[in-house]
Length: 100
Image 1: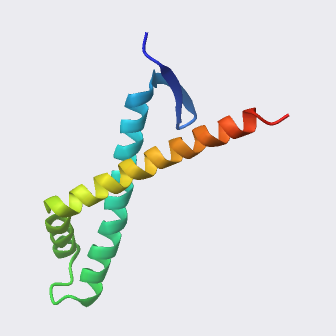
Image 2: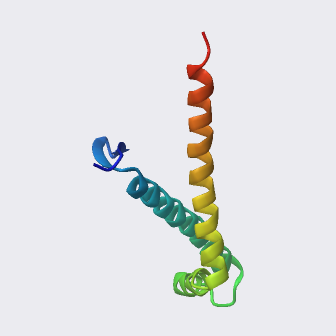
């Protein structure tokens, strides 16, 4: 049997494999980063650009996010962040468990 863990979302507990939970967390981080980039790019395009429309801002954001180096940077940052947090949590548990 695979090693399972609990994921709590929207007040519901779901049991799932650890790898799937981490992949889901990385996907949520990528989506959150893309949403923040949308607000920044579309907002600045809306306020400054000669084509001050939401459609122009969306097009500029989509063009930016679809670039492979940008998408790779977003995904790599999310993976490293999730793995670092789990590694740090495991170290804290080991240190906390060895104290009298």
